[in-house]
Length: 200
Image (cartoon, one colour):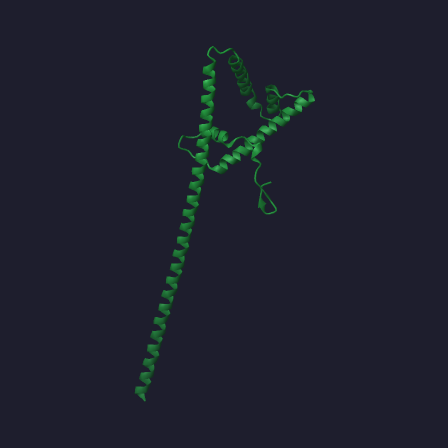
């Protein structure tokens, strides 16, 4: 529920996937110069997290029925198929098999252990750098949004001021025209009075 008692509730981000990971996946589908708004990232973050919970809860029911405690890949595929996402099952089966093959090959003894450790450190550093970049992007987006709002506010104030000036100018012109009209009427009345005096 987004609002309660007139106040906006803060989402529980502890149950969501890291927004840096969400943003990184989103950017892979976009051009390099594309920007993603913060609210778009947060919306997809919540949707993806809810979807994972949805699939996992169905897989958990299967495990309970079979009196098992550990959810495996087949349980998730079963849940995905049961919940109406059967068109994704075949490709996910293929991915699961390839993942398990890669996992087995990585468990083989490494001739140079230091190399594997170095790669892990490098990968971790790249992930940290990506998260820092995402944070910087979010800060830049926030600054851009604030500047945009400020400019829009200034433009709106300027438009209101111009409108007030226009109204004031129109009122002054109207007053001037009324004064001119009144002056003409006074002149006509004075002229009539002079004509009457001459006739007498």
